[in-house]
Image 1 (tube, rainbow, N blue to C red):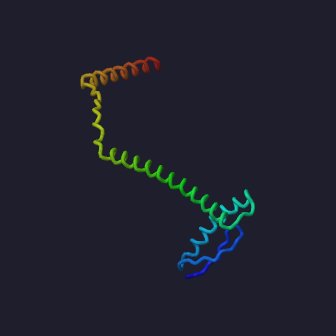
Image 2: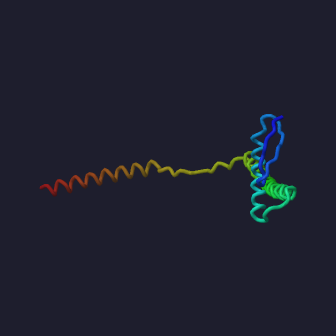
Image 3: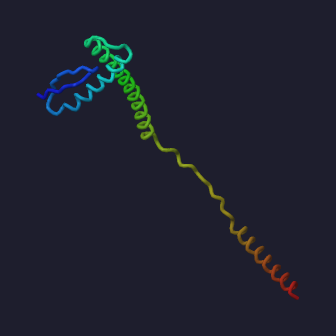
Length: 131
């Protein structure tokens, strides 16, 4: 079991840990040291046991707040997941009926005849304007 020296509040501590967990221990010690530094800056020098207790309580408070937030987010996620599943299981919307107007053939024929007459008149006007 490796022995690791960690510093918390400017004080060194020898701690044992499992093989390969040294980096986790250093990370945890840094978190505790950061809290101890805040206490030291605010209060000044205090007994080691009190400093460690207060720093641990501050970390526990942050952890509890984080766990509360995780519960809130998990509840929101569960609600969104349930809503999504409900939407997936719901039948699709009814197809909308769209009617496209159809022009009767008689109207088309009449329009074609009017176009032909207009072209004929335009040709006659052109002939008279050239004469």
